Amino acid sequence: MKTTKLNTLTKTMFLGVLATMMIFSFHSCAQKALFLTSSVVPAAQGEVTLKKDKNNNYVIKMQISNLAEVHRLQPPKKGYVVWMEADRGLTRNIGLITSSNKLNVTFETIATLRPTRIFITAEEDEGVQYPGSMVVLTTGRL
Image (cartoon, rainbow, N blue to C red; front, side, top):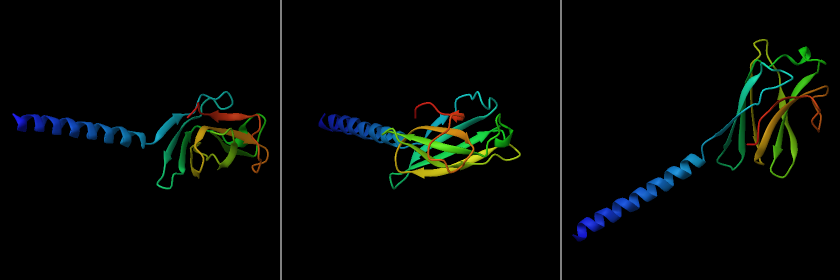
């Protein structure tokens, strides 16, 4: 009788520990977000993957297809700039992207702050410190 109760208790504890481990392992998985449909470049589609690395930084990866060459926009621009909004309301320029003749783009960078939104603008000057008004693609809240 005692052995049966002990085995049942051991099984229950094991299942509880296993369930807890599974919950924490899913929490560390990458988060994906799709870019919303753009009024500037309606054919463009893409996704952003956000994952925390072993140093507690955030790895941001993007894949975009059908992104028009920047000089074909109306009005034409010089480059695409990738921006990140962080928890504290900060907006940072995190890089430049260049569309190819095949209209596909990949981008990867690392951020120390957790992004709450990623967006891309078309700019006259690629070294700008603040985003312009021509937002090409944006995610919802991450």
